[in-house]
Image 1 (tube, rainbow, N blue to C red):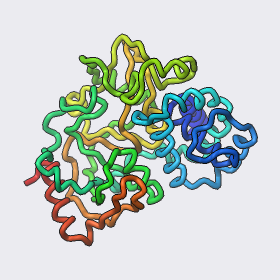
Image 2 (image 1 turned 90 degrees about the horizontal axis):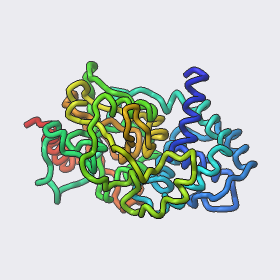
Image 3 (image 1 turned 180 degrees about the vertical axis):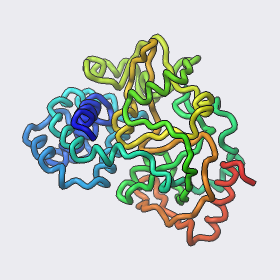
Length: 350
């Protein structure tokens, strides 16, 4: 990436809820005065310096694990501590600019990596008790989550994530601790994909295919299901924050049916996740938008553009989130048969 693009990425990190959470998490790694899981209320200059200097010792897998965890627990839609954590994360964000610049310098290329059509994985929990609820995808794009953050008629994949982040992913995706398997879904070379690397990419998607929310918002966005508007006072006082807005003229999200007329999928890169998840953007024609509930690098597929699904070995799940573990669909013939029936039903193949 060019210097300008790298610098812009660092600035985006300093404005985004998930971004400021990651920067604080990287600083905490260099501090002995408080536990790693506690959101800091103040920044330490020396710890910031060490975090920026030692960024070369952080592996990409470790970065993704910290990013996914901190975005969920310190800035996420269901976190009971988000509204108490985020004001301090924004207050000290500029103090952590050296960390943002170090992350951008070291990891920009990996975090902005385009979708790998040869490495898309479909992950699946054991749902023997919910088989009757499984319907084919790609049939009714108006069936959306919340106000339209994504369509239930889509199919999710993730790009072959490192084992170190598997536990964090199933937590971020709100899995329930059931045994989880994964399958490779080969993609056609001509698949049409809209890529999201930053909030501006999401805003362009919304402005190109707009749908104004017609009912009162019931999600995290303005604010969340586990928070009350009165609890946002301190966060709203932070002029740099992009995490909450209590007064809006219009809340706009993608019209997924129209997106599906031109694109087969919408891909959120890791850079896009860090800078766009939970980030409120003002739209050029009025109103606001926010991408929410995606949880990680992911692709939401709107059409069957896949080859034949292939079972994979078990994901590396320890059970610390919900107690479930990974299942090797390539070796477990019973699970492979169950999964195969479900994925073919989802794809509308009988």
